[in-house]
Length: 142
Image 1 (spheres, helix red, strand yellow):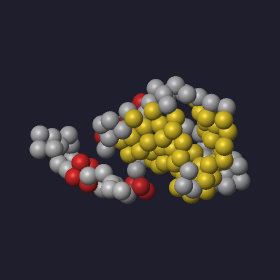
Image 2: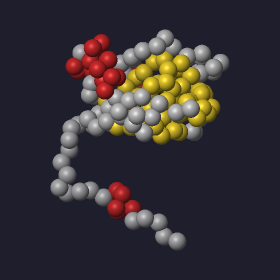
Image 3: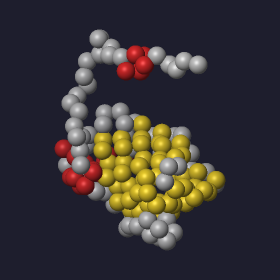
Image 4: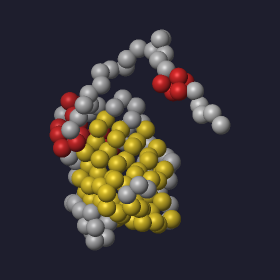
C-alpha cells in the first residue's frame, strides 16, 4: 500500500506570495489575558487564526459560552472537565475536542491544573479586543 504523494503536501506554489513575516515566539513572552481568576490566556494571533495557550489553576471554571469562531482544544498537561453542549468528559494529555461555531461549551478544573491549547479560526474576536484594550494595537496580531 502506498501513501500519499509527499510532494503534494510539501510542494511550493510558485504563484503564492508571503502574506507577512513569520516570527519565533517564547510562550512566556506572550501577553497574558485573564477573564476569570486562575485562568491565564497567552494568545498568539495571526491574520486568519489564533493559537491560545491556556493555563488553569485548580478549581477554576471557564463558564459555558458560545462564539462565532471555530475552535479545537487539546490538553498538553494535567486535566479538566470539558462540557461540549451537555456532553461532559474529563480530558487529559493527548486528548482533543472540536467545537463548531455556536456550540455551547465550557470547562473546569477540579484538584489539578491544566495546560491546554485552543486554536481558533478566525482569531477569537473578544480575545483580540481584550489584548488591544490592555496592551494597545501592537499586541495583536503578532
